[in-house]
Length: 257
Image (tube, rainbow, N blue to C red; front, side, top):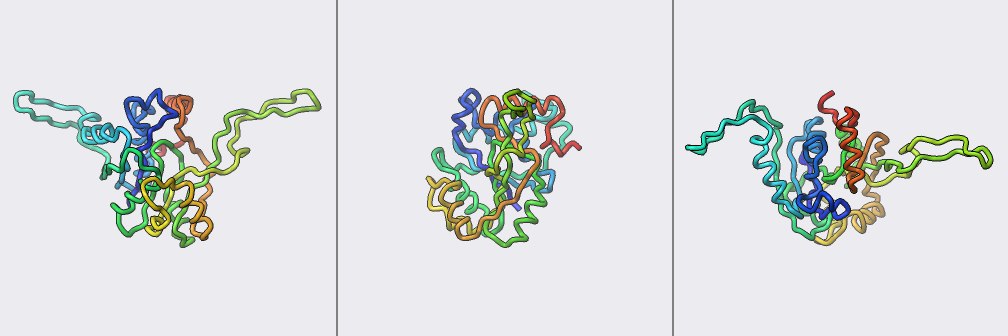
């Protein structure tokens, strides 16, 4: 099964980083967050990716074209122009890098990915968030209900702690618990080809009319994930993810357990 990754947005809320590169190429622990996302899917045996490019897509192309050279030792014969790669083990990934348009919205990108993949079930995720979702359980859940689409529902990280009172006195402060928040769209979709019938054209935002119509028709089911999930919308999010990685507390780093 192929995994589609939406990697073409402008990333305007993270302009400090995205002025020179697309948001999926913002680094956590010295590697683009896109790499982290792919490593997580690869952990469950999914190694073929269809990356929907848009804003500064050439940066993503350059990175993966040169990936083997970037991550391994090299011997370079300048006179002949030969490059020998040492310690050649590498991720067994196949990447399809699709130019899906600079202004194309999420629905349009999904429709283009689906057209490339053909008439088979596929997964879609955003190129700017990590989680410890059990992909095999997610896929089994999708297959069990027989609907067109499965969305992973997550609890957003609470930004502020709580205060408890004893009358007007402050009795204590609570942790920033995710469980206190409502459920939101965390991405990590499993979609059947029929989903594209709900998407009109490139300017269709998947999270609006298509998802609303899928829900109305009883074709959208939610897989509830109560574990770790974190998007990367702001510089604060980047610093949080970097801190988790550097302190060895990155819950999405399941490939090194």
